[in-house]
Amino acid sequence: MEVEKAQELAAKYAERRRRIASVVKLPMLSGKVSAAVLIGCFLMTAALIPIVLRKDPWIDGEIVVGLWWLVWIIALSICLYHGHKVSDDHELKSPRSWGLKNLLSGWGWDVGDAAWIDLGGSGSEACAIGCLIIAALPLLILLIWVLVEVAIPGILFIAYILVRGQLAHVANDKHSCQGSVLRSILWGTLWATVFTAPLAGLVCFVHFVVSQRPA
Image 1 (cartoon, one colour):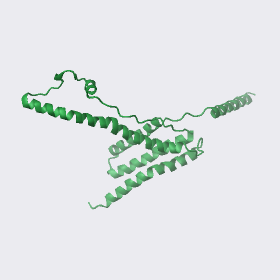
Image 2 (image 1 turned 60 degrees about the vertical axis):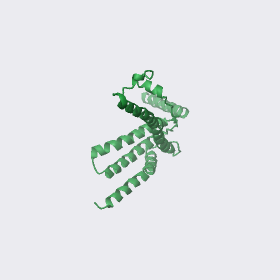
Image 3 (image 1 turned 30 degrees about the horizontal axis):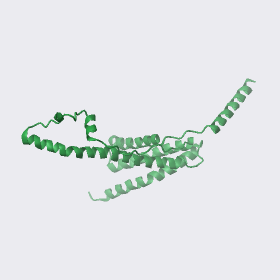
Image 4 (image 1 turned 135 degrees about the horizontal axis):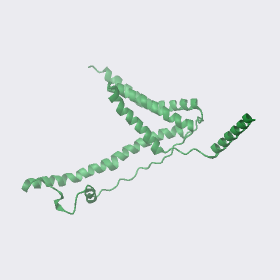
């Protein structure tokens, strides 16, 4: 009797789980977080492999590409097995305008007092230094603005688009892999190979060309 009751309770519990699973959908994975994790793994392997192995640069490059291939296989297989979808939740914001007065005040300089610049000299020498500072400061601010507000966000956004796009292309498609370890690994390996094959071919080609050059 106790065994039958236990089996009956287990059957009811399993049926309840199936009903909940059919009603409640899995939440979408954040595209921003997913891309950040993958990019972090790629950068970490690219930075550590040359330091740890200390082999020829092209051999290190081939090993790094191989590790990226494994990272793609793991990420894609997990998404396919669990049936996760990947959202697009990142936007490239417009660059902010930096005012010179606000920027200098943010650095702790008193822009209302002419003594905030210490020329370190007097007479013509001080005048020349002051002119150089005045001429170079706007250019320096412009370069910092371009780097912080345009270059770095642009590079990160392109990396996000590429990585998130590849991940979503596989995870958001219908491959009937949910709950199947074998199908998830097979499809994950297939798409990971497609993504990394061009880069691997380029590294191998450059390695071959370099190795054929006379010493």
